[in-house]
Image (cartoon, rainbow, N blue to C red; front, side):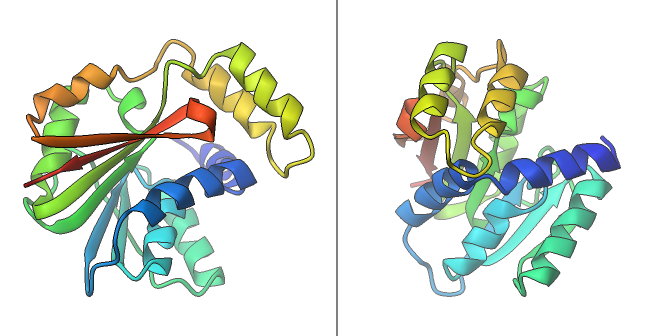
Amino acid sequence: MSYLSAKLFVWLQGAVFYKNLHSEAVNILPRIENGKWLDVGCGPGLMTRLAVENGYDATGIDTDPFMIREARRIAHNERSNAVFEVGDALHLKKESADVVSASSLLATLEDKSAALISLFSAVKHGGVLLVIEPTDKMTQVAVSDTLRTRSKEKGINALRLGARARHGRITDPKIFEVIKSKKISFVPLLGGIVGAWFIYKI
């Protein structure tokens, strides 16, 4: 990507709706004493910082050094203990984290199956993989309805940009079958426009 792309994602992650839906997903998970959280495709690091706020020892990785630079800058400014490193979804240490998260990552990848298998392999036994992605309900009509009811919310217009960027690139929930987990739960976020999948390693 580029410096400008990183700045665009910083703006997006600053939107109220974006922070709130990620906070909702993070808050569903229990606090684990000294728990390890790995946020893959972290971008400017919102999810990683939220994990730290919830008591986790959290590390965010991204292939883009510009994203990592922005993530470190924001964490420093917010006095967050989140750690950020350059890395990618296909080269993860096995069973290295209690929680592995990936937000708006799968829709951008060519080989989603390989990425999911790699992400799940990094989850410790008893842990969970959290995947947040737009659903098939993220249509221009649904987004327009949301914008109409939340027009005064800071950064809400970023949702329109996100819908355009994701149009035709929605992750099919059937893809999670490649993991063969015995426990998968789905939580709709933002009125179902976005979804959180919790895939447990039991």
